[in-house]
Amino acid sequence: MKKIEHIGIAVKDLSLANEVYQKLMGYQHYKTEEVASEGVTTSFFKCGESKIELLEGTTEDSAITKFVNKRGEGIHHIAFAVDDIRAEVDRLVNEGFTVLNKEPKRGADNKWVVFLHPKSSHGVLVELCQDVDPAMIES
Ligand SMILES: CC[C@H](C(=O)O)C(=O)SCCNC(=O)CCNC(=O)[C@H](O)C(C)(C)COP(=O)(O)OP(=O)(O)OC[C@H]1O[C@@H](n2cnc3c(N)ncnc32)[C@H](O)[C@@H]1OP(=O)(O)O
Ligand SMILES: [Co+2]
Image 1 (tube, protein in one colour):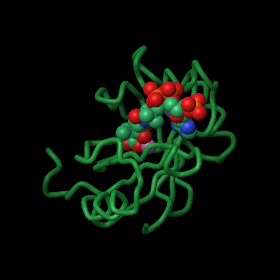
Image 2 (cartoon, rainbow, N blue to C red):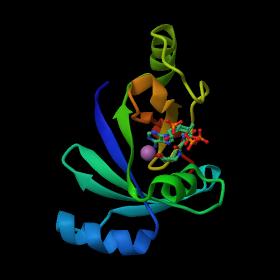
Image 3 (spheres, rainbow, N blue to C red):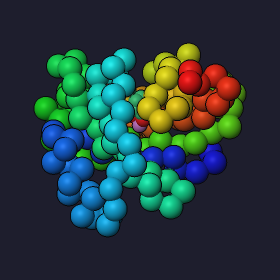
């Protein structure tokens, strides 16, 4: 794992949370982005080499909506940056971790992402992120 790529925080109201986190961080988020496939809208604050990712669920069956309804707002996941997400998936499967999506899927902020089941990591939902090759990003 190269670094903590971001900490995901589930919130009920993204614009309200953006205002509070702007006060907390002392600067504005640098982007908001909807990830329809996940039923979320995200906003990102830089923090050193990592980020804070705020997430609001946009659909009833979104993982974020379910999380907030069941557990309230709060830290939702830890994302790690990796160089080779497929190699990491193979390594973690061999180590006995439960991978929720072996095929990387597109996440926010130009990433390929994979999630591990929280039961594999003592109750913490882990996300792996690999940068999408800039040449592959639609202009
Ligand atoms: C990809 C876009 C963006 C990005 O960074 O680019 C994102 O980060 S999107 C983030 C939202 N998407 C996901 O989280 C996808 C992966 N998550 C899932 O597949 C589910 O949320 C899953 C499988 C973790 C849980 O779903 P399930 O339907 O099983 O919900 P339950 O409430 O029944 O949970 C089962 C069990 O897991 C515990 N749980 C659930 N969520 C979390 C969590 N975030 N952290 C820790 N533990 C979690 C839950 O409490 C249940 O435990 P139990 O002991 O049985 O009560
Ligand atoms: Co995330």
